[in-house]
Amino acid sequence: MEIDSDINELLNKYLLGKNILEDNLKKLIDNFVKEHGYNPIEHFKSRIKSKESIIDKLINKNLDITIDNIETNIKDVIGVRLVCSFLTDVYDIVNLISSKMDINIIEKKDFITNPKESGYSSYHLIVLVPIKYKGRKDYVKAEIQIRTVAQDFWASLNHKIQYKYEDKIPENIKREMYEYSLIVKQLDKRMVSLKNEVNGSK
Image (cartoon, rainbow, N blue to C red; front, side, top):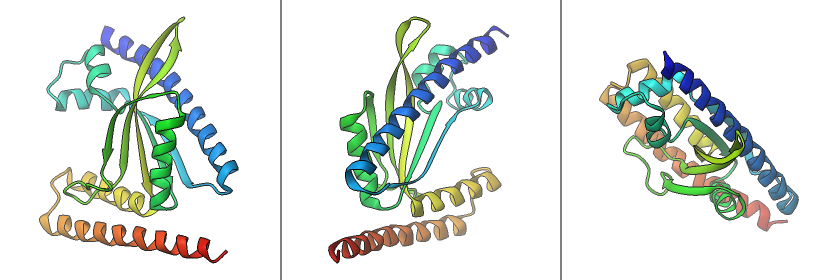
């Protein structure tokens, strides 16, 4: 199919964007470490969404499988996740990305201040990454997720539960996961207080 070839070509462009975004984020973090004396990032992950996942997402959105629909409507073909030690680090990294990186931020979603109904908490940025592809300047969309270790643990467990139940999660499990999200929120706040206490005692 011609569309398969077109999508493969498009994914090459996204791969270039992912590599550029990764390099820029690593430089940003290195500079933060030099300035502040510690690394706020516990884990750094990135991926390109598979062709099959892209097609499934278009189908779920009732959209035709076209390159234009992928570029316009799929915001997370490139996905990057930064897992931070402390809640304050999340906002430090968001501010750094907003002010220090050569990318265009087109959308901010603060699911920490305003968690999803399920209890999911994270900070999402949708960005345009500038690339040079086949001799011309272009842009690709990417999603950057920034969250704490505790939030990442909850999100990972919730994802596994959704997969097991194919998104039809029993109500009692939904309630229990929501209660755990409140515990995670409280834990993150207490860890920031502990961090401040330790720093203040130096």
